[in-house]
Length: 362
Image 1 (cartoon, one colour):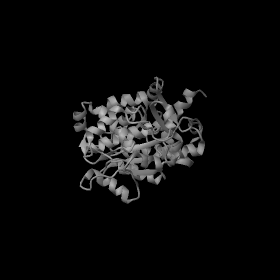
Image 2: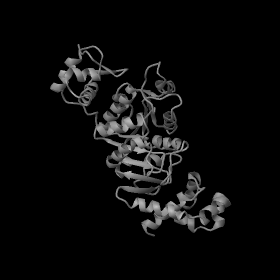
Image 3: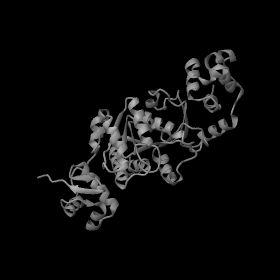
Image 4: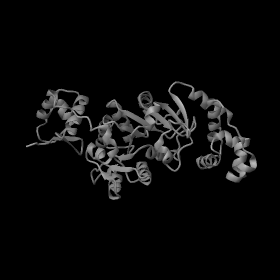
């Protein structure tokens, strides 16, 4: 059987209306491969999944959807991965309900890299968005692939942070891979597809629907060896991701915030329930011992002349990034990069409210 014929059978199995993931896995457990399923007699199939599912499988073939998916996968950088593919993410195979088929756009080699999920509120505070971007940049620079959901807010900041550090990032989405959502993040999605990967379990054309995103969240948790929640209300979907990660035995991390901020209460709940408190990037690295083989977080070997000037301009009182840009005459982006290195080097503290303070070494 050719590879195309085999893939056609995988698509037929997953695109048959009314045959969900649980039934697909039951059939695969019983018969091994889709081509065997479709070659099996009605009575035998019915004994495994019942009469209704058997009729759907043998009497329904969504040919137009199959041909559309095959054509999509023939384009450069676009792939269909079934459970039997060697490139299929091994971390998902360790979960109780791995998707039968994944739609992937981008780099296949990242699907089995060491990954950390970074998730949180769609409406973060400025400090929360900055934390997501800065932590993701530093963790990506340390060799982790940053996984998130391409949503507004923390998700988008996490993806941007990883890309800004020339690191790797994967977006798990809750729509068909040809229906990027939200529209405002399409430019970001194109950059992720070019330098990282976008992954969906949903058939082409699937629109955004509320029921899709908890399923997407389980993939984020399953894909990653740990989940970092940056900011979240108590109703945030990111708490679902954290709970699923904990149920899988993966690490859960949370960044604390103001006791007065609703956007911090979800993180505080997680901390009460046993999540690991995160104040610095090193807190994550130290907990994820498997990362040690990748080496320590890259830090500047010495403080540059510009960074020394920044420290002098800062003094020892808290000040904002904009204040420092004004004092030094540098751009806010340049100041932000220097602050990240100084923070990782233990010379600057990142304070609540978007302020920074020089740490005395006396």
